[in-house]
Image 1 (cartoon, helix red, strand yellow):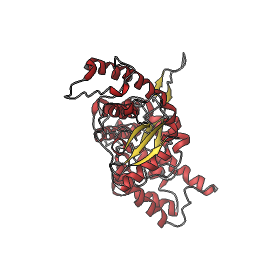
Image 2: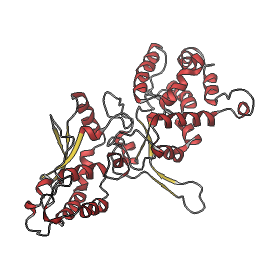
Image 3: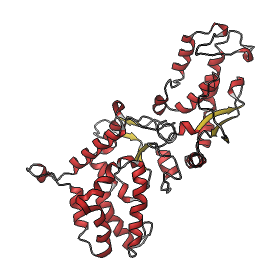
Image 4: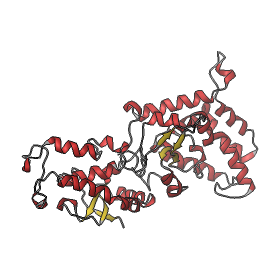
Length: 368
C-alpha cells in the first residue's frame, strides 16, 4: 500500500518509480546546469558540481570529506540523486563511516559556531532549499501522483489556488526526509528520500527521528498492508450496534518486519489517530445492515459475493452502491489515494468474511 499503508511502486500514469527517479534526476541536473555551459557546445556542467568544487577549496578535513563526492567524475554525488532506499541505506552507513574517520569534523548535531558554519557549507551544496527553488513541491507531486499522506492514509495532500492576485498556490503538504537531513544532509535531494506527507506526520510526529530500513517501514520499499490489518472490538463480523475500539493486528511477516511495523505504528501514533474514526466504520456498518430487509435479525445476514448464492436477494448493485458511497477501494493500488482507504478495505473484507492475508503469529495492537 502507498506509503506506510501501501507500498508505492508507481507514480503518474503508472510509471515505475525507477523511471520517475531518472526523470527527476535529469530535471534536477538540467535545472542546476550552468546557463553559460548550457548554451555552449560543451557538456553542461552542473552548478551543484561547481558548488562542490568550490567547497573543496576549503582547508583540511572538510575538503577531504567533500572530495569523496567529487571523485570519479562526481559519481557519488550523481548516485545520491536516484539511489533506491536499499542503496541509501548502504550509503548512509558508508558515508557516516568516512565522516567518523575524520576526527576533527564537527558533530552534525552540535550547536557550536564551527558546527553551524560547517552545516551551512553542506546546505549550500546539498540543501533542500534548492529543491524548493528549482523543482518545487508542485512539480514533484505531479511526478508522484500521490494524493493522500502515505504515512497515515488519512490526510489529503492538497494543492489549493492561492489568494486572489497571488501566483503561489497553497500546498497543504510537506516532503519528509525518511533519512533525516539533520543526520544525513547529503540525502536532502535524493528522490527516494523525499516522501510526500501531511503536516502532522512530518512535524511533529516524525520530526528529526533517526530511522532506517532496519528500524521502520519505508513507503517506497515496504508494504504495511501485508503486515497489518485493522479490525474492531467487538468484531464487526458479528454486526454489533456499537464499536468500542479500532485495532491493528500485526503479523503475516518475519519477526524483524513485525518489529519494524510496530515501530512505525508507534512513531506515527496510528493507534491514537484511528481511534477518532469509529464513526466511519459505524456508518459503513449501518448501510451494510440495510441490505437485510429484516432489520431485527442481523445475525442471519450472511453475504458472500464471489461465486456464492446471496440470501435475502441482495444484488451486486447493492454491494457496488455501498462501495461507491463509502469509497471502499476495489484494488490494493487504490488505497493510497483514498483517505482511510486501508481501514475501509480491511473492514469491508472482514464484513464479507474475506481475509486474504490471514495473519499468523498475530500481535494485536488496540487503539485506546
